[in-house]
Length: 247
Ligand SMILES: Nc1ncnc2c1ncn2[C@@H]1O[C@H](COP(=O)(O)OP(=O)(O)OP(=O)(O)O)[C@@H](O)[C@H]1O
Ligand SMILES: [Mg+2]
Image (cartoon, rainbow, N blue to C red; front, side):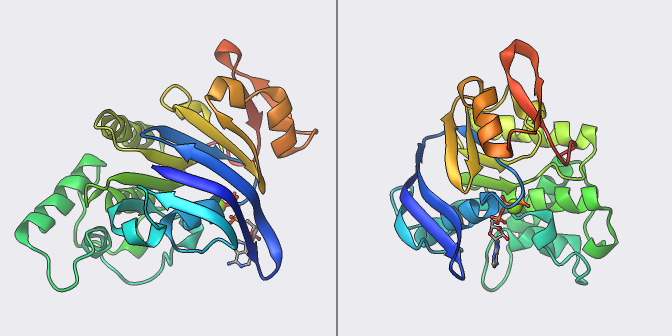
């Protein structure tokens, strides 16, 4: 479904990802790693928004660019022009990728998706919403086209607990329908029991596997450095205490 083989990527000669190889099937996968470890870069390669310098990437057995339209993507919050004067409905409808006009069923689907994420909004200006509400609008945009693959870059950032639960319920439903999901998170705890695998990244791939195996102290120290404070969570899972604890 997503396959990377010996992938390298650099920005202006500065290596951001080195020798990444993994295979993902119909699963719920979390990507973790410190700031600047290449998480967003990796996602952009899967989306076909960036091209690898070396190596091979296949999504549904195809070049990423060819399957872009099947992917529901939520970019990282800081990548969005949050002050641009655009209405909520137009942001969500953008997720449908129509060239000319939207049919009545597109409009209905957009309204329904906003309701599902707990937002009774339509004509409001995106720029006037709170950060957490903007996140949920972008989440709705990623879901509105009934994607075959869902990719979310720090989706829970700035989102309050009830809304996060609502988003997670939706993702669990999608997972049940067999839709593969990739999320970048800093705090793994809220989704620990939902995910199948973790990809731990720090420019290189530190670990890829089920959370219990991947998130051991040794791997976490490799990813985050030896002075990271490790909290040992329930059932022997480890979790690093870093930066943003609500994401
Ligand atoms: N457009 C760009 N031009 C130049 N360098 C970039 C660009 N985007 C990212 N980088 C660099 O590539 C590295 C990886 O960045 P990336 O955004 O993928 O990290 P990340 O793991 O998503 O970090 P964060 O947790 O802060 O979102 C960083 O060193 C970053 O400075
Ligand atoms: Mg990022």
